[in-house]
Length: 334
Ligand code: TYM
Image (cartoon, rainbow, N blue to C red; front, side, top):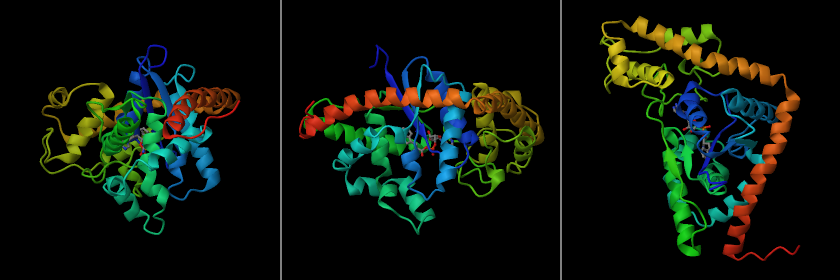
């Protein structure tokens, strides 16, 4: 609890350009929850270097991502929006938690298996212990709730296991966090292969809608979206392409699949695709405009970065000192 409010933590990687999946699965919910909780939203640049990055490009993407958080509607004066690398407590707590995490547990992580397969020439230890750093991110702020998409659930589970294990040894040190998964949009699929998750790293640019895509490109991508030959707009497992379009529509509009199916009763796929495309364009337009405006205000963004790094450090250090004491590190002499 901070000032009587429960704590929310979440983060995104600054690798690639944000997709509609990131927006509907996470960012949109962050904005919805931001009044209710004391929030920490991190640009997780430490996680990004588990895969090789071009330094200048990473720096630029990280800044763009931080700006996008604000452009999407997070008030940086109320919410702590900051770079993970500006708070050394993340790495310090991560080391300690590494000593409370088992190899067997990490071996089971599906994201690790996927990434190891994709980057077979660089299966580094960071890629393996990635979930431990994520646990440190969350536990450092005594987080109650973590809004994420479906793909991060396994990492939330291991975070809870590590926290419970630590608490069982040392007493109530960490708050046990709960995931928050939105009703719709928790798993947005590729527009080209709707059985696969929409991902920043997809090589096929038509598979993903990016947050900063121009309206024409968004419409074109939806028009080309893979559907099926059923010819009926229904929400079921046999029509993953149509279901994904409906999920996107529902998540943008805040309606249920039943309501959407009724709305499109008797209509064809072309009409569905156009309607979904237009809805996405209208949701993203204000974010894009604000992103452009903020991008020109360097001093403002710099001020946010500085003030929020201080705020995050303050709360992170509180937890870190407690943990260091519990495990037996010597007290600091002032
Ligand atoms: P990342 O950067 O891959 O994704 C950021 C957020 O977007 C969600 N997401 C999706 N949701 C729905 N459909 C999709 N197709 C889709 N693709 C991505 C993700 O679930 C996530 O919520 N390891 C994390 C970043 C992280 C983190 C944390 C998150 C680091 N530390 C602590 C929460 C708490 C990641 O790589 O997310």
